[in-house]
Image 1: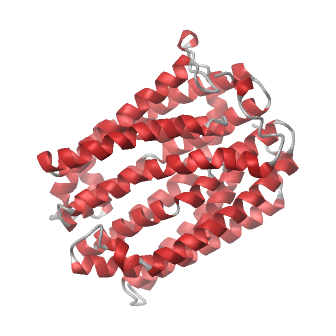
Image 2: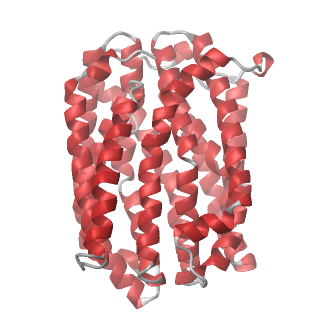
Image 3: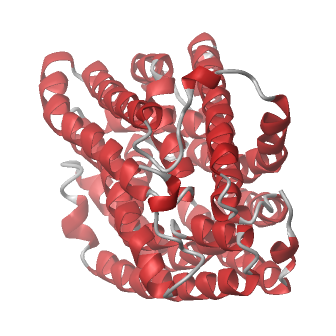
Length: 445
């Protein structure tokens, strides 16, 4: 598939271009997050201890993969600029260097996770009961970290090039494999089977995505005949990625800290936190799918020297994401008890999960707006502003308040939920203020 055969999103109807990008991204997001929900369902068959062990592992994993999130974000921003400027060779070179950086980073992080699994899980809040289970699950996840992370990393980069259908097919293959493999492996191997199912299914998706890039069936190509290190291009990607490491790492580290704080209230509460997070992630897929069109719309229109068109696209995306998100969150809060029973048979976990979902729904609405504006700034190559805003909202507001309200003030676990809502509200307000200043339109990569 040649670059010139792709729809030119720097021209024509904004709504049509956004929809053309958003619907495959939305389906891809659903397929990408479905494994987490499906995993939670099968872990629920093994009890709250298994769910808590998986949540501890994933909290450590999410902190570690902030590097990969930043690389995929930066690679997408650079690739989108070349695509918008109709520079095929530049886009291909950027993708090749991005893949080299991603594989190197994922492999290194996986080895670090294997070497330091015990202290990392202990730091995340694992106690004497959950640590042995968490170690069994975590060691498999870290051993297969390249397979786990290359699907979303590759997918984000190709999305920014204007071809979200590639990620859609990658996630279709991964998810279809998981739906068949996890029930079989969990019944056969228990907790280890759940981890192996995730690794194996993502590994198939990764191999298919790389094959598409190598064969030239995407708008950008992985040219192995030109396999080399291009330090100037890597430097261009890393300049955008370095602030994004903090930008992506801040919320991930915050969630890890909060997971540790929540774990002090017992395994049922930690399981409830895991269930609520995965339900929210899946429920907000339509909003996140719409917001996923933002980096391509911003990056390619800036590459085509049309900053005002980029700004109008962000405004339209934000309104659509908030409308859809508000409707879904309202329904989720109303039907929370019925939904939660799908994930747990433990009465205490069900009651806690329902309460968490209803408490956090307002904060998640603010989170949707923040994600759209974050994607707009990052798509323009400005990862510094979201980094600073994340540091302010999360580490000056959310984390201190979570501790103060839950313990010294005496609100207990409700103090943590209140701190989350206030942090997300401040984050969205600061993101909106920064976006309206318009300096992202002048950003050069």
